[in-house]
Image (cartoon, rainbow, N blue to C red; front, side):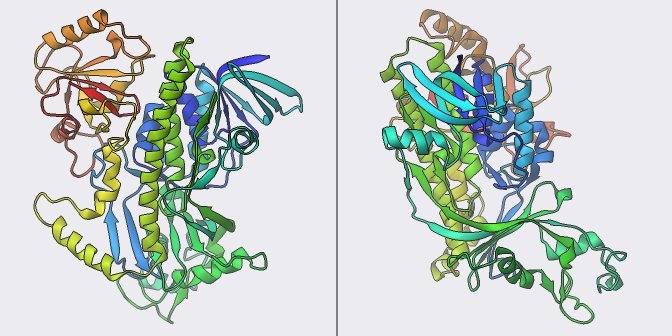
Length: 583
């Protein structure tokens, strides 16, 4: 019988990220996935916030251009995207204070390919495709997993820890944890259940050769200009009158992929999804004039249907739910196995990525100390459960806020708030109210009582991301400073002289701290002096020093220090970007 410290059931983004995050601490895991190939149907289309930072940390940041494109704006319209937005949120400034993209409209199969390639290259990850889990049995010191492989042979593996990342109807929760521990998905902080029709479309460009009778060519329009006019960039929420719609481009620009989702609350089996799609979509892709308002000769023109390839079109029942308990003994749930969301915020995949990343270092600590008592491991996992529930609730608030604008006509209250927000955003030094729901992500877990941090020492906040460099190196992302081998934590030393680092090393040698938590290799020195020439000392990179590197409008290297009290000399930071404590 095989054994492994961790067995992960399900190789979607959450399970794959967990395996790669465990590998950062040299923890071996086995992934069991019932499918042999990646599902080529793009499902989730959005990656949000620090989930993108996690992807950089596990080594696939250089593949973002293949996975998708950066989000530039969210637009809210009445009825159709042809109407000017009644509210638009510009997402190009550095609103999250993170250097990498704050949001990406992604192609999920491309994301999974990149993650799987990284899995295949890791000596700490074993990926068993085509393995259907058929039985799970609790043991005193773990879980026995039985599965049927591609050759229909029975396999058995004993896991110290089992993680269910196999979706909302997966075996780990539905067939195992529900019967033995009554773990179920229940309505979270917002009750929502509705049926929507969701379609993935791929658009090809009409040309003067393929469609010579279209009036665009005589007006001097190019095929790309026609595409941009009929299928405008960014993401669009369309509210009543008419059906609520969530729609827009996703994936790399050259893929010309379009997601179109619309509410169909009275769905029944007598309805035909594609007929409903065309009924909803046709008015939106019918235009009477070009982008400058010049009328088309001959009147309104529908974008050619033979240039719209329907990759998928079917109904989905969306809801917002979260499990009543995230773990039981040696079994844990992450991703869609733990929570599901409506389609208004693109939070599902991102929350699953956060689940896996923040669980990995905790499991690494527990596994490094084989004598860890159950009460201690339960307490560690309980802090994870509390923090992730807060994360899911925050994502739900953002999702339902978008949903309120999408599903209901614009209210007088929102109209008034929008006008006040516009006024305040033009005052010097006043941030736009529109960004406040998004900027909650910057708070981290400060609102969580009994989280894995020391609140009395200003722990719980999240690190900003900037560029840093030593005197003799090129700029790197500041998150890179948290990657230094098997020690989970990083000790940041903010110094203007050499004595503080020596004192920190002396303290580590005096106080018995497990190397799984902190070691001399995990001490990182950051100086406020840009001309500090000492070896290994990092300083923050100002905008003018970033020639050739990408950064957003409003990039501020001081954002990194602003997340700490002014008098901070030391800070212990968790690998999931959360400040544990400062002094």
